[in-house]
Image (cartoon, rainbow, N blue to C red):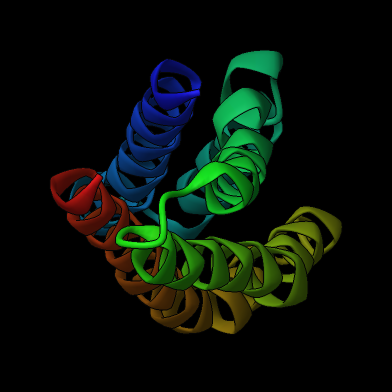
Length: 152
């Protein structure tokens, strides 16, 4: 049981780290990079990236992070369970933000591509704010799982 518990907790931590890194790199490199382009390039580039990221590799960690955290919570030792439950809540919060804010903004950007200036204006600041929140929630999940590992 201890081997399974440890393996799941490590896998959950790795998945959380990959998710936190994904949102972080969008916040500190991808969006600032495309922000330097004209409106049409900004909209076209982000639409291409938003379509490309929906792939099995990304979805494995996007959905796997909260799923693995849930399994880790079930298997957790009493000393680490509170940390895993915090991580699970934060991983779920990351999904909620993504589905409630970022995906609708992505869809609107795609739908409004005929007027790139308006599409960008409606998208850029709001998307960055919500992505920043995902950086915080996903990083918090990673830190909580690291805390659980230290107590396991």
